[in-house]
Length: 215
Image 1 (cartoon, rainbow, N blue to C red):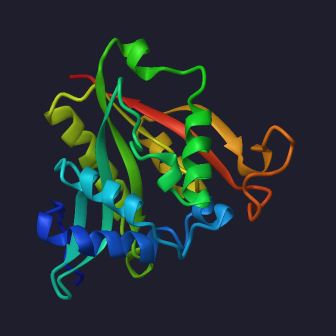
Image 2: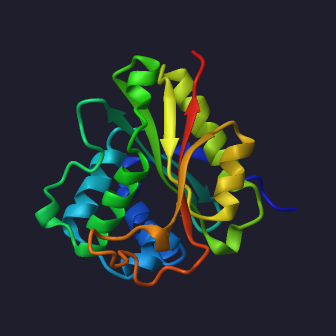
């Protein structure tokens, strides 16, 4: 009989392990990272930002008790009305990082959840990842449910996220996330009509989804 794996807050002594997990298990399979060419590349400034988010204390992981290693996780952070999520000088970013974050900003054009809810703060589920060997055990759903419970417990009025696979899109829909916008990666082009995501597949998409929390 398989042990029911427990969800726990990400502890500081596992920050580096979680970073390695994201780069090993998330980016190599995530459509935005693959389409931009980010998969397999690292940037110290990007990692520094991930660590800052982890220090906020709202990220969650699943640790296999047998191996004592992270096998799933949700990188969560707070978002503020007056602060850009990825608060890093764009000149410090790799081109691949920059195009992804500009694209995600583009998905939010015309929609202001802070204004709509008359709030100054919320949460973002940045990355949701399950190790391939532990897929199909419901860990992504449980991590998302616990993220929602955390937001409710600490009084956050919403969670926003950007799913980019059919599985995560369906998961968030089933948990009450509203799809605000959606775009195929191949349709995101520069002013000269040149594509931004050179490695995008025709059906690769990303969404902006928001879960409003009733506190």
